[in-house]
Image 1 (cartoon, one colour):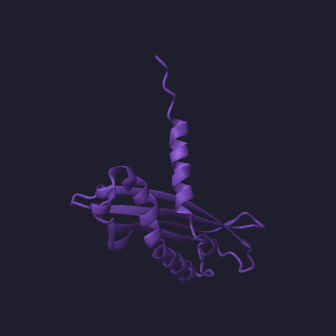
Image 2 (tube, rainbow, N blue to C red):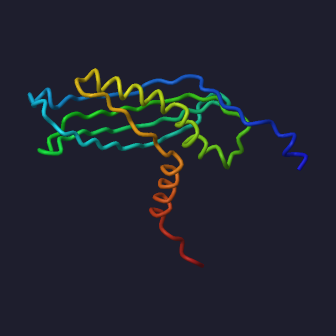
Image 3 (cartoon, rainbow, N blue to C red):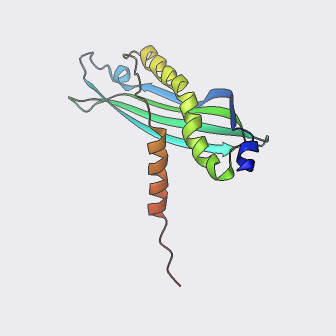
Length: 158
């Protein structure tokens, strides 16, 4: 009990954030499509994290693939792919908790900035701004762990 009280509190600071890669294709404009469309937007989210070479520094990234199609004609309106990265200084997180921390808490910190970029890019691309819903990073993390466990073949009992 005394060790818990003496343990240093967890610390996290965002050192920087940036767009590693981004692509926006306005397919409707390329094909000369009309303005009367009913968009259906699909968003795919992937998370990644890794330790950097500097002590206590990590990077966490959110990769979005956004596809907007016309519900009437199933024509693709636009495609947006973005890899958004945050660089974090993290201390006093137990080793067994660093992985979920990097894939849940760190993305939560940078997501509002990514949301703004997506809104601006879609607006500047000639569409109404796409305002992304909040992402449940805990559910994403749990689903990924479950998917990995399902892919791992069961070990034969000796």
